[in-house]
Image (tube, rainbow, N blue to C red; front, top):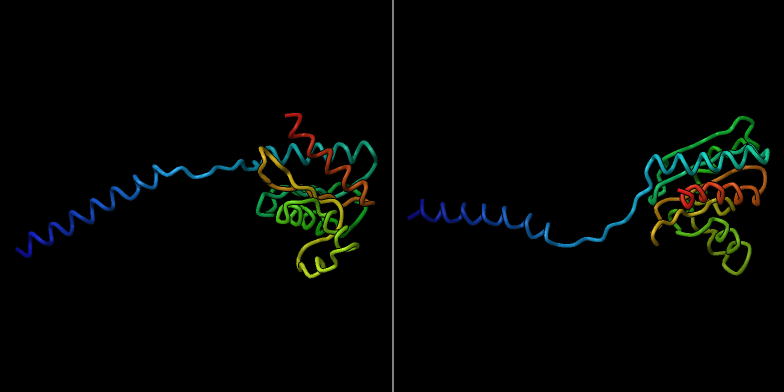
Length: 164
């Protein structure tokens, strides 16, 4: 009798172990596009080409949706030495806040100074989220000589995705 109960218990456990993965496989989970290394390199290359054509040496960073680095480019004679820290931080800020880092700069200078309490983020122009099919898949951050140039170079990088 004890052996029979043991066999039933073991059989029950095995049956459960087999059916649980099948049930999980049957569930439909949402999917999200991801930013690949290849795409991140195209974005950085396009941004670098814009910076070179305008004579704006800079630092360019591309991060994934979690704000983790994928690509960092430091051009020769980059205008701002701190750019190696600023560009990735701008990209991280844009990825995690899901909006351009310039929007946070505007908030800090305007009606929402409480944004200054967001420690560890860079509230400066130059970080732009990368959106694919309605999902933020990463961001690009640029540190050049002016905030306007940062944003222009970042937008040029983003154009690489639209142009294939």
